[in-house]
Amino acid sequence: MLIIDRFEGQYAIIELNRRTFHIPKILLPRDARPGDVVNIEITVDKEATENRKKTINKLADKLFEE
Image 1 (tube, rainbow, N blue to C red):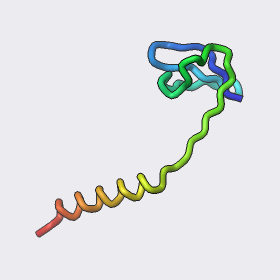
Image 2 (tube, helix red, strand yellow):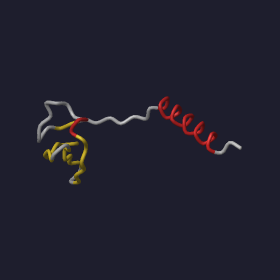
Image 3 (cartoon, one colour):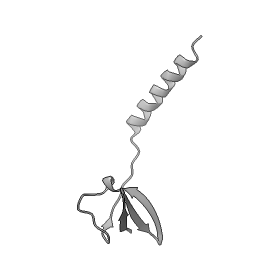
Image 4 (spheres, rainbow, N blue to C red):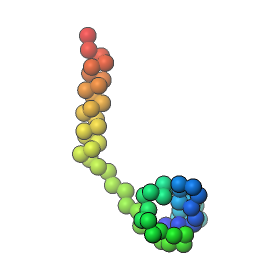
């Protein structure tokens, strides 16, 4: 269970299993308050990852052209 412990500047302090970590407040709903239980889902954007790899490979190819 993820619980908003408090806010510090631009960060929310989130508690999970007696451990805390910081996440940017901008990632939370505007109405989120200390004490609220939140759900966070993280996924991998495979298309964006592949596009990024292609861009990096193109830049590397240009760097090592003879």
